[in-house]
Amino acid sequence: MDELDQSFQTIDKITATAIDMAVRFGPRVLAALLVLTAGYFASRWAGRAALRTIDRFKLDPPVRALIDRMVRLLVLGLFFIMALQNLGVELLPLIAGLGVAGAGIALAMQGVLGNLVAGLSIIFSRPFRVGDYISIVNEEGEVLDITIFTTTLGHADLSRVVIPNRKIVGEILHNYGRIRQVNLQVGISYDTDINAAVAAVEEVLLASPRVLRDPKAPVRVTSLADSCVTLGISPWVEAPNYGVAGGELYQALLETFRSRRIEMPFPQREIRMLGATASVRQGSGEALAGRNAA
Image 1 (spheres, helix red, strand yellow):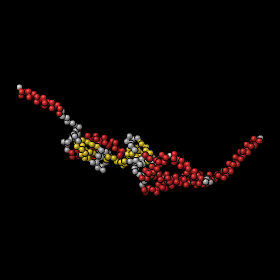
Image 2 (tube, rainbow, N blue to C red):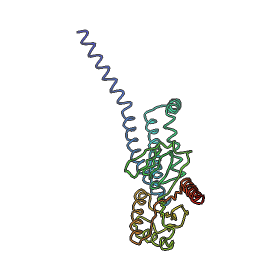
Image 3 (cartoon, rainbow, N blue to C red):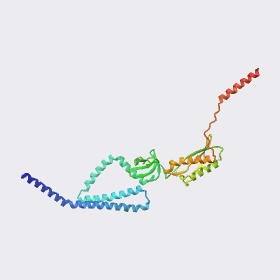
């Protein structure tokens, strides 16, 4: 009976303690939950309000997303501090502990923090935007997405390359924008009317749906080769069309030149056998000398 009485007494103490804690801390916990719930909805409202405020600045989508997240986190942080105060938590020791922990986390996550700082630099300095075609770090492609930590490039073969932002900042970047220039070369015979050939090339460029009308594509003589006159053709196309535009234009030029009988000569070399010619001449001279002696 004594053991049973002790068990009941223990249960009674636990129950009394739980009731006492519920009475003492229950309202505080409930108030803290209500504060956090209000903070969640307030952060969403503040984020939407911030986006409406910056609409007139016409910022890029990554910048808008970053501002939205920062505003939401700031509002949530303020409501979280209010919830801790309702629970009676001492904030100064907590802040000191978070500072020490933050220093250790910063040392352990240098690469992640480097990507974060580089991402902020890219988002605010805007060396390129979504939709631009860039070349950097031995990679090139159309910018599909810019986040705080990475930049995603798209290739013509529908593959994607994800580059950490710290690999981009500080490197030499070639930004083609949204258009690229295709450099083509065609050789024609020296007997061909150059003006007629240039006119035929311009007609091919005008007929191509991929070639942009503005800026106008330059067509000019670039070199006088051994067997042909080289025409340089440099039309502009949209970046996604860069890979296929060259082949289509070469095919169209070949068909047009054939239909108009514009000759595209093969590479030729004239070889003279000087040694054989000298031997023939020497043999002819000896035979002539023998006849004269006879």
